[in-house]
Image 1 (cartoon, rainbow, N blue to C red):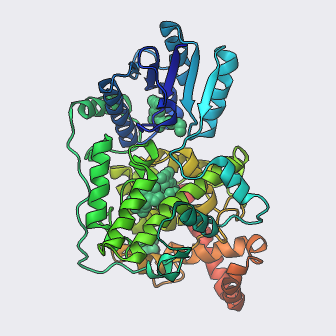
Image 2: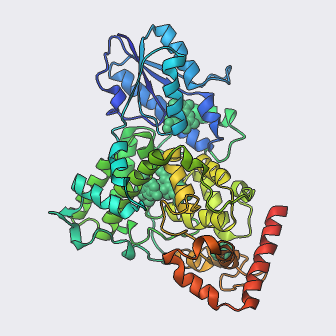
Image 3: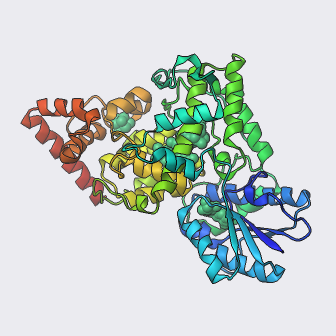
Length: 509
Ligand code: FAD
Ligand code: DLZ
Ligand code: SF4
């Protein structure tokens, strides 16, 4: 039996389930760069360049291992190419009689693959993606019967299951979570090491030219291009993080400094999500650094939690709740995405900095995504569909399984609290505490009302007032509503008036 093994762009792992038991004499490994994917949303130029280059490098590695590889480069003369059209042609060319593929990361692609058995009249075997640490079935069983799904409890199970940072049956250091130690504001003069930089080889150069020529109207810059595009490079990036940044990862996890986009984060999500790195090797290396006294527990536990906790949790939730999850809109939010999300032209310095860094690097760290860009989207009642599309476009690590729960669940509370126990809404005080953005802003973060006031200050209260009925009974918001109840009518009116003026200007712009 001759088999076609389809490898998707985020499946660049030698250990991939669809690459097990390959018959090197007969089977054909197929990669396809297709318009359907590149245009599904108008991905950031750097994201397309990164993925195409990583795909091309990975295909070369498989060829060198003796596999028969067919690599379909983006066909500039046929702008209708899709996974299906390329697979159909390859089935005919190679006279293959079945397809093997690893479970895709997006629901729409899974639906498409499932339809082929009928439309292409060949059996298709969809294998589990065992690069993740929790199967769909395990997550379903963990979730079943729970009223609320909280990452913290899921995370503890994962720690035990994989014996990570454990001291016998107890968590290392006596606590499961050291997050309370991980909220240090940025210090002036903080020495942030340079992030990993890869040199551009012939393959990447060709891809960069292709992207500049073909996707000129997409968001973002291709230069500077520093991503690793092979497993070897991604491992170097990981090692650099462990050696130079991990020790401060916890302390400054939430901190933001103007002109320092990378801070002490790991910058490995692009590699993890396309398969160049595996989650367990990352957490094992971090744990080793802790055991060798090279990094403190608060940093290592924080890092481990992001990978075996949040990353697996959002994936579990995505597959548990799709396709309905995508339609959720708890606040009935309907405002269009303001143009500054694309241009960076805004008088609000925090937003301007985060958009411009996103445009340049196809990266922003978690707190920029959540507490600046996301906070605005929540408070301004932006439509979940538009916000999701933006996040899926602009980050090089964005695939729907991870982007959607973070945006609809964590940022917009569009799922009504399935993922988060309360909306992550904040006034300017939070951004001022955790960043140095406010000092270069035309607004005054200490002012609460009026045209000079930081818009986050009144938008925060306006959001709570507008959504009183939906949020007042949330126990985690009872203190905030008590404060609101103590405000006099004049103050409430000033908040409402400021918000009205702000939204009018925003909508008219
Ligand atoms: P670090 O801060 O160094 O964390 C280490 C790793 O932990 C990351 O590489 C990532 O794999 C994982 N991780 C951390 N937080 C999360 C999380 N909330 N969900 C899932 N994994 C997590 N992450 C993506 O990989 N793709 C996305 O499309 C994406 N969209 C996001 C959208 C919003 C609105 C928010 C608030 C978060 C989003 N995240 C997304 C999560 C997180 O912001 C990124 O994983 C992180 O910024 C990547 O940078 P890093 O590798 O330096 O991460
Ligand atoms: C993101 C992306 C893009 C832009 N292009 C391709 C492509 O041409 N070929 C491919 O195999 N994958 C691409 N991807 C990644 C896919 O969108 C991703 O593999 C699926 O959505 C499944 O998660
Ligand atoms: Fe952002 Fe407000 Fe600070 Fe300006 S003053 S940077 S708008 S938080």
